[in-house]
Image (cartoon, rainbow, N blue to C red; front, side):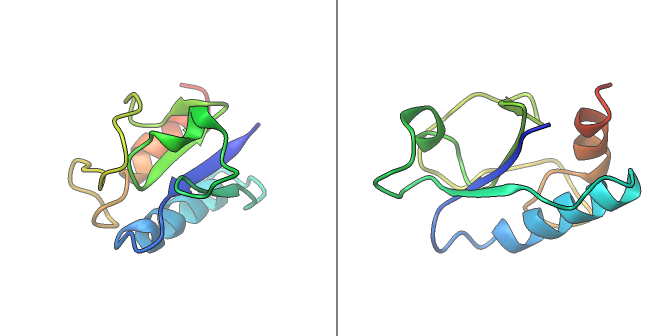
Length: 97
């Protein structure tokens, strides 16, 4: 399983997204490893450059079901970690349901 946390420098919500992702992985007894991608870095592949920040991708699919929307702050429904995807949303995608 390929897990990526996409953000850009200065994103105020990336810390909460990181915590939510770690908690979701732990709740499923999965290894807490994932790739962090800076969407603004010059060497970032084009297909990862246009996601809002923060975005969590599981095997290339956004946990929130979104599509790339450009370099912007991402909005999510209310969450245990403000500014991050809700835990249930991440867990559902991690477990394949």
